[in-house]
Length: 123
Image (cartoon, rainbow, N blue to C red; front, side):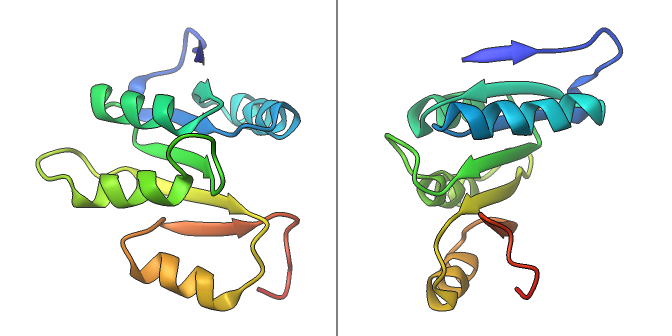
């Protein structure tokens, strides 16, 4: 787990990035820092859920669908089933092309947004 916060950053703009591909993860982190976000990065779902359960200041999580350990979808479902904790907005990165899987994921307590990788401008 790696955390990077700039002096001007606050917990209001803290983002968890859970991605097992280091190239993709570093690219996301680079953009987020450029846009002024503080980041916490992990490479597996087990570390991601631990952070989200322990640190309620994280309000946005960008998750790979197919993480080692808990998947991005399992993390989303756990977040949606808990009560008494602040809402965490979730974005799932996925190479899955099936519209049916995407709809089931959104209906089943899944992420706030699904981004296809590579991005399909027709979706």
